[in-house]
Image 1 (cartoon, rainbow, N blue to C red):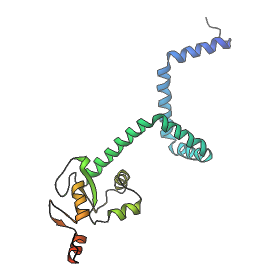
Image 2 (cartoon, one colour; image 1 turned 90 degrees about the vertical axis):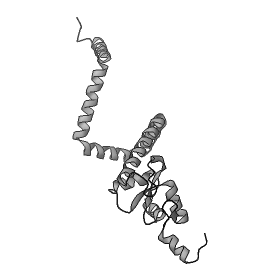
Image 3 (cartoon, helix red, strand yellow; image 1 turned 135 degrees about the vertical axis):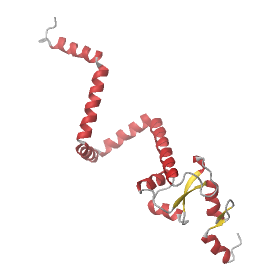
Amino acid sequence: MMNWKDPEQVKEYFRQYRETHREQIRATNREYARRYHAEHQEETKAYKKQYRLAHHEAALAKDKEMYQKHQQNIRVRARQRNRLTKEEVIAVYGGECACCGETTLEFLAIDHINGNGYQHRQSIKRSGNPFYHWLKLQGYPLGYRVLCHNCNQSLGHYGYCPHQQIVTPAFAAALAGGWSG
């Protein structure tokens, strides 16, 4: 029989209990934390923000340490997230090259129909994967289409695509002005 008045015996009893019921305790704690966070989302968000502001250097050091520790997993998840976003954006804008019909995701990109892509990306300060995220956040605005990299480069460099012989307005104006390629 255990002597509940002896602190050492009580301590040993609870240590053994925690040891034998470790997974059940962890599951209960995780469920409690999930429920608490769901019910107090705004409060915990405000607290975390206030804490990070008050302990800025320590928070940065902790972030750096966690990144170093989990760098590979973070990069893998980022690549997966970026690919899924690109797949979604490409699918919304047609899923294939508007010029030649190419469907291989790795060969596809978003093209600014008006030809002002460089200036637009500079103005929103996003290029590559962040641009796909921006399109998604903006609700997939009009004025974009899917082109494969070959067609996109040809239109940008030559002003037309050999698949369709579509001439851009800028290229037509340059030809009319006596430009000799």
